Amino acid sequence: MKIKTETKIGIVGVLTIAILVWGINFLKGKNLFSKYNTYYAKYTDINGLLPTSYVFINGMKVGKVTNITYMDSQMKNFLVSFDIPANIKIPSNSIAEVYNSDILGSKAMRIIIGNSPTELSGNDTLLSQSESSMFSEIGKMLTPYTDKVENIISNLDSVVISVNEILDKNSQQEIKSMIVNVNQLSANLASLSSNLDNITSQEKEKIHLIVENVEKLSKTFKENDDKLASIIDNIANISDTLAHSNISSTMNDINNSLASLSSTLNKINVGKGNLGLLVNDDNLYKNLERSTQNLDSLINDIKTNPKRYLNISIF
Image 1: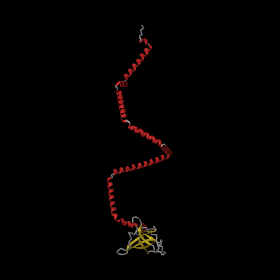
Image 2 (image 1 turned 30 degrees about the horizontal axis):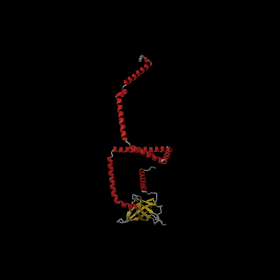
Image 3 (image 1 turned 120 degrees about the vertical axis):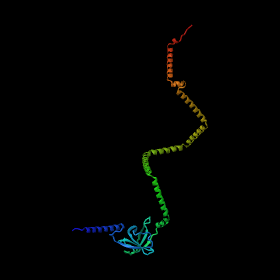
Image 4 (image 1 turned 45 degrees about the horizontal axis):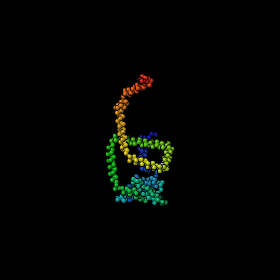
């Protein structure tokens, strides 16, 4: 048995519509396969409650507001309808309260469960009230400052735009490089700290010995306080004596002597004077050495042959 194309298209269309309806209700938080009861609540001020606001019981989301209508032309009274699963039993003295669900001021409804043994059924109306919360009061107090905050934000946007215009690609690249260098420096400091920790742990015994030695030295200083005071007094006396002595004159004499010695050495280095010639002229040194050798030879010959040089006559 073949199914006609039109039938197939009809079946697909029905399934598509069913899935679409189910998806929309699922996104609204409503399960088509669960049974819901509709309840009502009357308010003179709904405080910004919306038809999509959630309904909570003891902090748990159980339903959603489905509709809000005004009951008179002056909009002094509002009728709010909301759906709750049928398996949740609501005592007759329960209260439907509009409140701020978060610090941003989002509105929601919560059911304050009563203690009455009588339970409400679908389409019943609950007692109602609106919460005058701290957040609402703060919101009212902050209302005059809203424009100022908006102006500040606008100015900040202008500043950010100006900064972006100033910071061209080269400046941004330099800032990135600086951040990389800072990160590298931070990593190096962390590595240095780790190395210092390792050194400290390895040298703990030596550090302990150093501390002990310092304590012993401090104790020795304390025990010899009088001797140290005497030594310091002696050093002070010596310092006073040096201060009152004619050190400047002595230093001048020393400087003059050093200057003369330096001048003499300079003359010797340039070959001035007999000593300069002797130091700088090799020929003079060689001649002097040769004369010394000849004189030594002459003395030796005189000792060996005195008659050759001495002519003695006896009368």
